[in-house]
Image 1: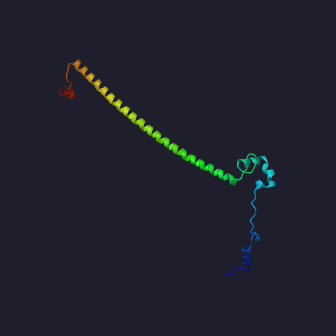
Image 2: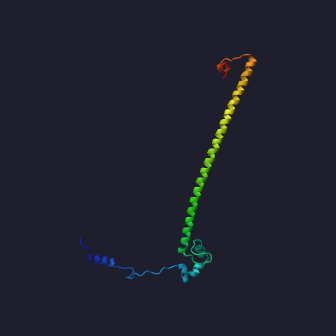
Image 3: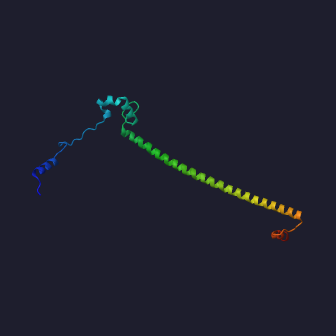
Length: 158
């Protein structure tokens, strides 16, 4: 189906429309902070307070150049990253030292506990021996039934 000549004409006309009117010149950069006509507005209390908190002007009201500040910000950010890495390394090192100290203490405690158990076992054996000797003395028995190892000790000298 052929197109309507009027719609074809309108399409060509629309395609040929240039909103810049053929001028490709770049407009100069505009900064409201540097505009003389907006200076009274910028100096007003609320606006200047907002611009100070966002870092666009300093405490004296001078405009802060973002390009100059960007370098300083990058340096500070690098320092922060380095400080965080050093902090993590220090925490890791501290945890390793704590683990070594814990292991050393536990090892020493293990030795102490073993020595205490051995000393307790020896003390229990000594007390049992005293009890058995006293029972033998009171009863007049040299051997107690159910305790064959007592006989062996006397005979074998163990």
